[in-house]
Image (cartoon, rainbow, N blue to C red; front, side, top):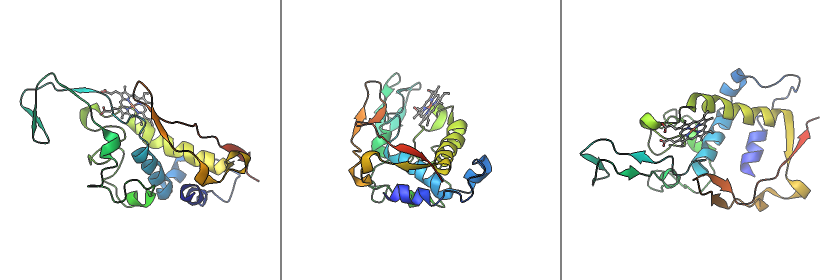
Length: 180
Ligand code: HEM
């Protein structure tokens, strides 16, 4: 509920024109809401498997042999109560004014697109397009849940596919309505 109400306050008053990239830069709360969604529901919750290519690697005090496959649990890293306050809650505010918490994985606590050399190569596109698409859809249309369903009844149970993609178990159904 909070997410939808807050996002909707960013709807532009004039419906005459479409959202532009310049508008999206001026929507810090929307950017923060996108990041918060990626924190709680990362598309690839185990990133991609990595391979240790050097001898003498150490992770968290453990010696890791060359040739070992490493799987990063970004889902749990991004919900770690040691680094995130109230990690289970959807609170976009936590990203406001935190430029270091971008999508580039500079801080290991937030790695929705990975970090380091294996970072998702589509990152510049994702960073620009995802907030832009969300803003455009919110600007152009009103959104309702089907059959007058209240927002707190949306089933947000998660499900992993066999190739490590995180989905909603019950697909979200929303109804776009033309804004008048
Ligand atoms: C919201 C959209 C996207 C998300 C959340 C996402 C996320 C990720 C993640 C988490 C990884 C693994 C990084 C790691 O293991 O450290 C990855 C890798 C990768 N992504 Fe994306 N990605 C997105 C869109 C795309 C798109 C649109 C493309 C292609 C046009 C793409 C191409 C790739 C490729 C090729 C890799 C492998 C890079 C490597 O292993 O060196 N991604 N992505």
